[in-house]
Amino acid sequence: MNGADVLCDVLLANDVKVCFANPGTSEMHFVAALDRKPEMRCVLGLFEGVVTGAADGYARMTDRPAATLLHTGPGLANGLANMHNARRARTPMINIVGDHASYHLPLDAPLTSDIEGLAAPMSQWVRRIEGAGDVQPATEAAFRASLTPPGVTTLILPADAAWGDASPAAPGKVELLPPPTVDMTSVREIATAIRAAPGRVGMIVRGQAARADALEIAGRISAACNVRLFSEVLIARMQRGLGRVAPTRIPYPVDAATAMLRDIDVVVLVGGKEPVAFFAYPGKPGRLARDDCRVMTLAAHGDDLHAALEALHDELGVKPSQWTVSASAFPDEATPGGRLTEDAIALSVARKLPDNAIVCDEAVTSARRFFALSAFAAPHDYMMGTGGSIGGGIPLATGAAVACPNRKVVNLEADGSGMYTVQGLWTQARENLDVVTIVFSNRTYAILHGEMRNVGVNAIGENARRMLDLDHPALDWVSLAKGMGVEAARADTCERFDALLDSALSRRGPFLIEAMI
Image 1 (spheres, helix red, strand yellow):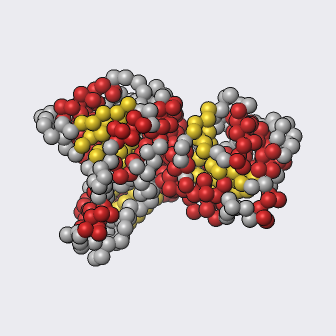
Image 2 (tube, rainbow, N blue to C red):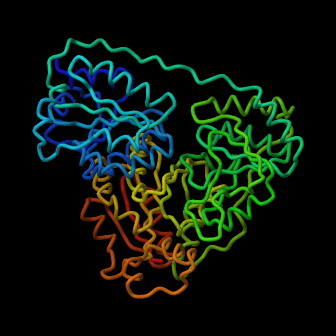
Image 3 (tube, rainbow, N blue to C red):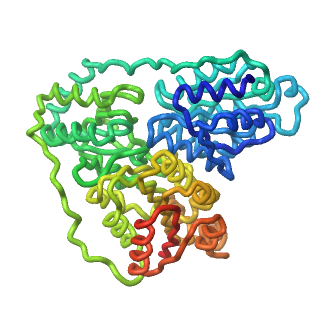
């Protein structure tokens, strides 16, 4: 038995049974070990950004880590953007990064790099394995670190640690510490603040507090005590749809966000941080709440958010009978026809979404209306890229489909963002994943046009246009998808889009719709 076998055994003993991989020479002993472990599902990504993004999607849907396998520092570097999104989502992930044999490092071979330095900014925990005998304790520590509290961990596996002889391992399940008990002092202080400012308290939920059972408790508090319920701008995972409490999402544009929070005197955080602007703009605030707004934390990431909400609910004396979910119907809105528009797509997807679907939203500007409409859709899970690093949508959907093979995944994808990790379509085809990708094909970085206006530029010239538009040559998403084994078709009218969506939702397997808007 070698170190690579031990690493696999520790992962499997702790129910880490999926490895998203893009290996290289230094990882061949680990690849061979994986080959001896049929219990481990190995999923190949053609680019490391697909690998790390898919691991993020998998973990968001299972609340358990997947492993990734990356090749030395440059391979890790290719996956950093989606590791950043995963870090911001507080996603459990175990990155295994191969490296040269320890005695080869002083020779400064071409792929030698500072892996620790590359990994640290996008990881909550980093460790280099010191030899074959260190594999088991290091891997157990990586698993523990990925879940207490959940976050991105990176484990560096030198080649000689992988091929070195190791004593047969008898790994068991790693014991995890329970979350801290609810801080009742904070509960009582927040209850007092809520009573003192009815209608002027905003509660922001994220993480486990954005799941249906916790949202029900938050909804009772909101209705009984006149507390406004919000989500963060970028949502890691929220359970949405008919019969579920629907927090209001804080808008991305600074002016809209500050207007929404203008009347809030107290912000209560449940699993999240104080909302701030994405960027600094001349003459605009960085904090979205007023400077004199009081920010209070009920519970932080890693705490038992459900228990904290229950404790606040009880402290406020809220009774279940004070709040019930009503089965709201869709807004009375005519079915659109003719030329396809962003709003028509959002309305169609919300109306047709299957029960228990998973929606991965990276349409950026184009699908902004969908989130509001999703409150009236069938019950589903909703996820976004959380770190502002684009290229997460296709991989996120890929990982979610691996995690939940019996659920339909719908990926709302911007054309510019999708090109960052288009290789994920190939993985969807290879694994026959049940993903419908809807590409909003406006052939521009529309969000950047808006950002130009935000900094005071109302008319752009040829140089700026060439950096913001994608129309020379125009992207052909149907050909791109078919070239990677995914069936695809194009729609430029509402009628054609509805027909394609009906067809895609009625069958299994990957399908891409290029929506011309």
